[in-house]
Amino acid sequence: MEDKKIIFSGVQASGFLTLGNYIGALRNWAKLQDDYNCLFCVVDQHSITVRQKPADLRKNAMDILKLYIASGIDPHKNILFFQSHVPQHVELAWVLNCNTYMGELQRMTQFKDKASRHSDNINAGLFTYPVLMAADILLYQTDVVPVGNDQKQHLELTRDIAQRFNNIYGDVFKVPEPYIGSVGARVMSLQDPTKKMSKSDSNPNGYIAMLDDPDTIVRKIKRAVTDSESEVAYREGKDGINNLLNIYSAVADKTIDEAVAEFSGKGYGDFKVAVAEAVVECLRPVQQKFNELSKDKGYIESIYKEGAARAERMAARTLRKVYKKIGFIER
Ligand code: TYM
Image: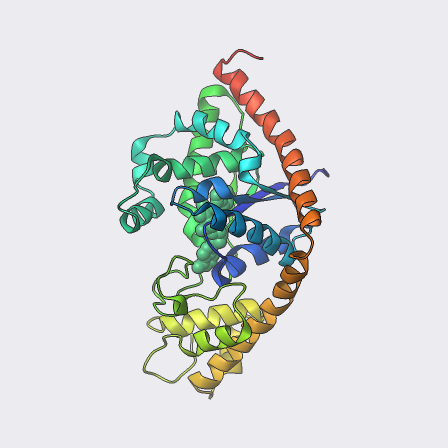
């Protein structure tokens, strides 16, 4: 690989991807691929912290890999792979588990949120989930981690674990920086714009799936919750409109000011139609590419097999160093 800074990021395979994942993550990744050496992982091992049906997990994981490529992430420039294909992730996670405090994990808001939503299955994996995420990142001596705003806390923990480990054992890990895009870092639910858009929303009108057809997208945006005023403006108290403006500015590549100016004097109805059209047009080429890729299993297989082999070579180097520093006997 050329001598560029390293990026690592990933998406869980627990369900389909939403417009939030696209705007907050995938789209940014595609923009970064020329300037960095990038590893983009489908983090299937993270997914099983919530019970998954095996057939669904298999399909979702494969769809996500295809969506990476369909979003413009070049599989030859970047390393694309499944987390479960590179055993060093869980191996390093064990070591990091022994260097992470219960108190740190108890403070994680995603844990608290998921534990309350899955109170019948608060498993140990759900609790130590952020440690596996730290292992994902630290294994590759990652410089930069592009994520949406909701992952900021996990990134801070990753940095704390890396610094702690380095203080004890000498410089082993690069301490990574988060990269949070300025636009669209937090796409909110269309039905409750105070909550983030999430695939686990029980109301499908709250999210747009990356593979929703145009009619569905238009219908969902038309139903989006707004407010009792009529002015398309970006300000406090207008959560629904702010969210639609954010979405519009992200998919139409305009600033918020440009978007507001464009709709001055227009009503919410016209505005929603324009947002819906912009989202449809933005996702159309991605969906087309996804459908083409779905016809070529052999090609996809060659991508993730090569990706895992390349990732494993990098991961093994870091893990070997970690084991040596800790005092494990070399094999
Ligand atoms: P996950 O799978 O929930 O989401 C994947 C990426 O999408 C972003 N995202 C959003 N951005 C804006 N608005 C939204 N509504 C929205 N919803 C999701 C997330 O911030 C994320 O960047 N723990 C991670 C997966 C992970 C990971 C990693 C990420 C595991 N290991 C190592 C980076 C590096 C997660 O659950 O993301």
